[in-house]
Image 1: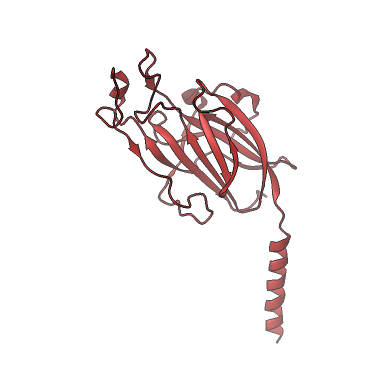
Image 2: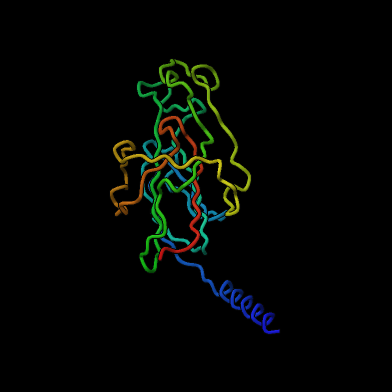
Length: 221
């Protein structure tokens, strides 16, 4: 009887604790080259306010949202390309491969406590990679899918934004320096934590669309 009562008390305390957990207000600061869309789990939170089609669309975004632990932070990030060749400024003297870059930090909006930053703890999946051959940029009439302008494009995995999604086969985010990314247009307006790093796929120039995710199990103590 005593044992059963102890079990019931434990279950009751656990249920009360879970029920009483309140969402926290999170401040997010993000800079991307060129565009991002952010989700808390499957819930859409924020899209880059500057369209990716805007030439040199460099800008930073600061926004808040509410969520509960464990947190699932999800980004779709894109570098601008005109078509599946992976090139920009096609048909001009500036015809070239572009390059990407994403940096973000998340803090408790009420306490200022650091919750997460972009670093190698994130897992990323490239779903658009082009051109497979950089000689494509030298073509007078580059055609997507034809050598040397072949590309690889895949769909987003089903349920990849869910906390339970198995990302064990995804690669760790590749890290880049500010010198490699060349951030501008709002980057310097944010006071970045020294642990926040630029992330992208393994190829900064050819990886045009990436998915990146991080699970934060509990608040830092």
